[in-house]
Amino acid sequence: MNEQKKVKKKILFTAIVLFVIQAFAGIPTPGVNIDYFKALLEQNTTAGLFNVLSGNGLSNLSVTMLSITPYITASIILQLLTIVIRPLEKLQRNGEVGQQTFKKYTIILGVILAFMESFGFAYGFGQKGLLLSFKWYWVALVTIIWAGAALLLMLAGEFIEKKGFGNGISLILLFNILSSYPSDAITVYNRFLQGYGIDKKVFHGIAICIILVVLFAFTVYIQFIEKRIPVEYAFKTMGTVKSEQSFFPVKLCPGTVVPVIFSSSLMAIPSLVASFMGKNFWIADMLNSSKWFDPEHLSYSVGAAIYIALIFIFTYYYTEMIINPIEIANNFKKTGGTIPNVRPGEDTVKYLTSEIRKVITIGAGALSLIALVPCVLAGLFDISKLSFAGTSVIIIVGVIVETLDRFYAEVKAKNMKLT
Image 1: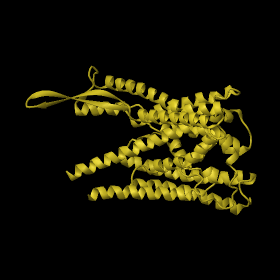
Image 2: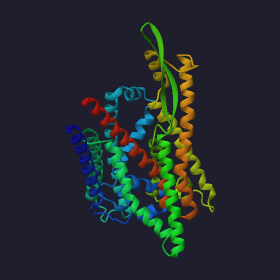
Image 3: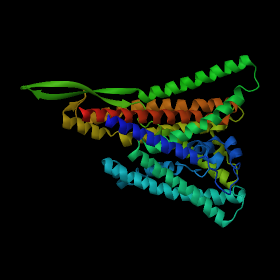
């Protein structure tokens, strides 16, 4: 009973912290023009990604405007740097201690990026109307507020992971996205239901519900599906050699939300830079998902191909980071495990590499499909906000699945202690 109470307290503590964060997201930053970014977000869905990830921080210009986006950006940068900086790669693979050190580096870099981004927004956009009074002390104050809030949210995420329940950063991101859904629902209502007769309202409403249910169901399905590679373990008992059948699971989407977040974040950067400079660039429009699949500007749809390519690249890259065929083959060798009809050693490594790549290629294709369906609808029906539905669905399902896995693992571990 005590163990159950501890789990309930952790969940309650996590919920309280998350609701407090959402409450702060509703506090406007002093000295700013609250409506400044609303027109930009309506026209540019890639810039709107940051708004969704920050829990409408950009559209409301709240004190938590940046939310955990600097942490996400820092994570992307460090993950990419592991390719060229060997010590970082070794650190990340160095078990729990290495992972904790890597997280500290991510927070440090996230804080630096938070101050840079805060100052960039306050100074760059401040002189163009973001600040009600463009004075140096207002620039400094707004910079400190936004960067300080971003740091507090990063620490809150770590605090949730240590004292609460689940991955704190992921849960903050989940709540941020969910907080943007009511405004998305209003957008859908205004576009498809308002002004129509009762028959069309019912038809459109049913069609929208079916699309959302299918989208969520398919996303859940690909999160749980896995390929099981058979493994045989030989052992001696009573003077005879026996074998035991087992399997090594390879998930269809081992990186869950990571490839999509990385890809979407990189796609959003050129649009923000163009907005900051106050100019229009063809490449920024091409990377703006609201312009994809528009019959009048088909050339912009090249951005969709780039988006898909990035999802595939990050899927391969992230999978190689968390699933190492060489380590798996060595573990099989140490424990007496073999894959039927595959020789131990190098042949096992090649076989595992081939099978893992086949599986994750299908997974990357499934992620791309989910991410693009809303973009197609947005291009055809001119509703920019829906272009984030695919990305948000993947993140929501991925975080929920990850949290449930942790919950069941913790409950199972505590039950084993009791017995």
